[in-house]
Length: 188
Length: 189
Image 1 (spheres, each protein chain N blue to C red):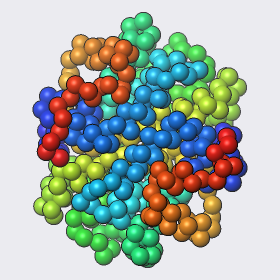
Image 2 (image 1 turned 90 degrees about the horizontal axis):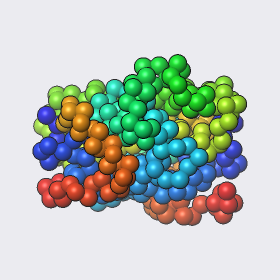
Image 3 (image 1 turned 135 degrees about the vertical axis):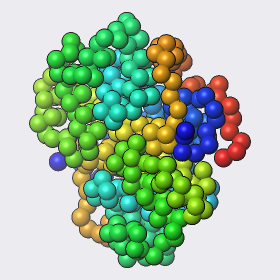
Image 4 (image 1 turned 45 degrees about the vertical axis):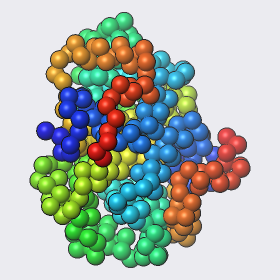
């Protein structure tokens, strides 16, 4: 049961977002910019970073829904997402993406864990300042979203099919519109 | 030295915010709504939650700038902020705020550390669902801001006077307006 009264049957972060639309707006805008806006990193690569950090934070809802979005962008490659969560260093992704995931993993532990060696490795594999910046910020943002979801003990579906649907909807409609269909909260 | 090329002499989060103005906008709006928007918790109380979480995350810039904002909201009571960081349970703040700080401290460790007992205690001490929600989200948001600041190894001033100025600015102008008033040299990136 959630720690506060949230609308029934609304999964994960969407519950608190319906509860608090004023804060949902900037959070969704931020996620939209980071994960879907034009970028030299593909949407699949950025969703992978979000998924990996959410997995390290043990946030079931976030790792499953963003994992579904990432898989969808990558031609419905769900096994790849599982491999990345298990051990991204041995998974079939680019060396640059591995170096960025290493940075994201450090950010998840705490900002000061990121070393100049981590950054140098990413740069040697071709990462730009903007890509390094975006990786750090995506990882930081998911340290927020994961805590928001689990800190309020929100409800999450365990039906993989629902997450596949959500992954497709994210790819199609993005994050800003994700709250449009939710009931407007009047009790907060 | 910062991990990426940021404008020089720009402190803490202001560096990356200048580097990436598109993402800066919603980040500042979120801080504005959470810390200064209409709320039954005072801005001082909300800044105290931000300060405490930043202190637990060992983020020097955030704990000093938000600590200064909290102190300035309280008429310059910097001593209280030090007491709060040392041990909020013995600090002269309300029992309700103490219960919300317990929740915030657990969010800092990870969302699942927040227990039904933590929430029940806050409720017994008069916290509403909205206040519990806001305490959780402020704590979560500062787990983001702190990582942004330290994950890029931003430059952070050591002079406490610099933070007093920031605190005054944040307490009087807020986040969105403080950012608009940044020196032009900073915005030029």
